[in-house]
Structure formats: structure tokens, C-alpha cells
Length: 175
Ligand code: HEC
Image (cartoon, rainbow, N blue to C red; front, side):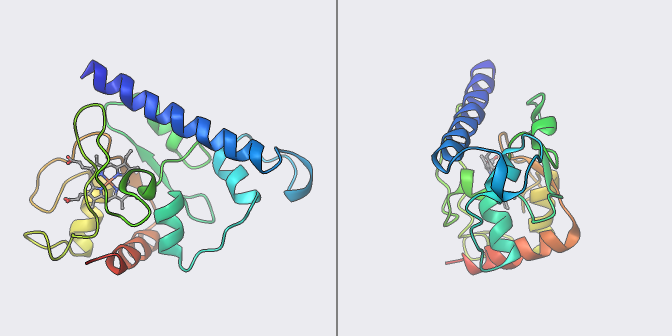
């Protein structure tokens, strides 16, 4: 457990580091793109580069955030994660960060838990995920069979419309 926590923190630090590197690589803060906005990795990433997304759901999946910055999360048992992950927090985890941009998962964490394959939520599962089961997994960390999803799957808070858009997008990844 302890080791798991340390590794989970290490993952967060690596993600922070990667974000910082990206930020430096695109020219650092300040000036041009919008002035002082607070030191939020999300805002920096939003201001520089401004990638375009095919849908709101894709944006949420890839960035863990919506354009209004309304999405937050908490990793149960990881103190401080809520503070970092809240809207406007220092950094943001994304679905893609743990489940892969294509949703195929397979990342093993320090506690031995592997990120799930989100491309098999319907065909590969019994009962198949539908919107309400997906919403329960994402917001409360309970899977389609009623079992608790383990760390580091976060518990997310987001507006209902965002959750819908996310499910619509995740459905397009199904095999
Ligand atoms: C920090 C890593 C991490 C992030 C970020 C993350 N997940 Fe997960 N997720 C996991 C892990 C690990 C599991 C498997 C947990 C287990 O097996 O107990 C999981 C499981 C799931 C499951 C259950 C799948 C199944 O087979 O029952 C769903 C659905 C899911 N994640 C969706 C999402 C979505 C959508 C997002 C973005 C809003 C997201 N996850 C972000 C790590 C993450």
C-alpha cells in the first residue's frame, strides 16, 4: 500500500514534469496568449498550442477538462489529489493519460492495478456498460458489476452534459 502510494505520487510528479517540459518547449508563460491566469497547467496548455478537438467528449477524454474548466477529480486514498485535481487545480489527469489516447489501457500502476481497456466496455463486458453504468464508474468508482474500482482510478465530478459527451466519445472507441 505504502509503495503504491509512493509510486502513485511519482506518476503524478512525472506527469507534472512532462507538462512543465511541454510548457517550456512551447515558449514559457506570460505575454501574448492571455496574460496572467494563475499557475495552472491546464490553463497553460489551453493557452498555448490550442489544439482543436473533434468533439467535447474527445476534449474531455484527452485533457481531463472541459473548455470552462469545470471538471475535478479525487483519487481515493491519495491525500491532496482533490486539491490538485479540482477545477483550476495545479495539474490535471486525463482519461487518455491512464487509459491511452485510444482507450486501450494496459498501464500497470505501483499497486499492481492495470488501467482498464475502455474499448471493450460493451462487447467485452457483462453486463455491458451503458450510460448509467459508465457514469457510476466515472463519478463513484463502481464498475458494471457493482465492484469498487481500485486506485488510481479517480472519482470525477463534471456537469451531466460533459458526462454524456464523454460517453458518446468513449462509445466511438468500442471494438
Ligand atoms: C490515474 C489513472 C486513471 C485515470 C486518470 C482514469 N482512469 Fe479509469 N481506470 C484506471 C484504473 C487503474 C482502472 C482499473 C481499476 C480496477 O481494476 O480496479 C480504471 C477503470 C476504469 C473503468 C472501468 C472499466 C471496467 O472494465 O470496468 C472505466 C469505465 C474508466 N476507468 C473510465 C475512465 C474515464 C472515462 C476517465 C477519464 C474521465 C478515466 N477512467 C481516468 C485509471 C485511471
